[in-house]
Image 1 (cartoon, each protein chain N blue to C red):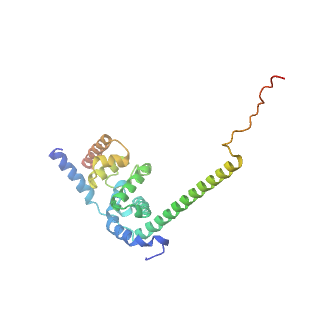
Image 2: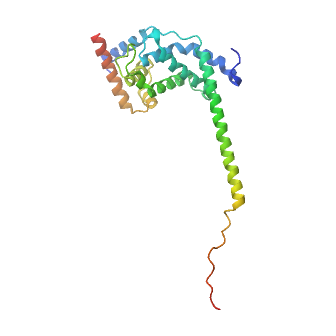
Image 3: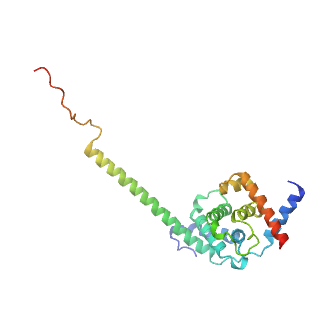
Length: 147
Length: 85
C-alpha cells in the first residue's frame, strides 16, 4: 500500500509502524474499558479504529506529541461520551464496575497516568478521580472475593 | 501510600495485565488510514466552504456599502422653521 490515499500517502508508513507497535496494547485497553471478553471485543475494536482514524487525520499536527498518548486520549474521551452503551459490560474482568470507574482504574493503574492528567482528560476535579479510583479498587476486590 | 495499598495496587495491575490480549485485526491500519483521510478531506471541504462564505459576505458588504454609502449623513427630513416674513 504505497499510495491510494490521495496526497496523504507520505506518512502512511510511519502510521503503519505506529499501529503495528501500539495496536495490541491499545486494543487491550479498549477491551478493559468496554468490559468485553478478549475473544469477542467488537466495541473495543470499533473504538480503537475510530481513535486511530483521528490520529491519522491529525498526524501532521502532532509535531512532538506522542501518537500513543494522543490515540489513548481520543479513545478514552470517545468511550466517556458513549459510556451509557457499555454500562453493563459483557463479561470482562471489569464488568462489575461502572464505565467511569473502569476508565479511572485503567488509566491510573494499567496505564500509570498521573491523577491530575486523568482529571484533565475526563474534565473532572482530581478529588473525584481519587474517589473513583478508590471505589473501583474496593469494588473490584469485593467482586473477586465473592467470586 | 502505605505498603499494603501498594501491594493491592500491584495486585490489580497484575490482574489487568494477565488477561489474554484480543487479536488485532490485520486491516486495522489500512482501515483507520482510509477513514482518517476521509476525515481530512471532509475537514478541508468544510474549511474551504467557510472561506468562500466569508469572502462572499465581505463582497456583498462592499457592494452594499458602495451603493448606499452609509457614511454620508442622510438629508434632513425636517425643514427648518420658517420665520421672519
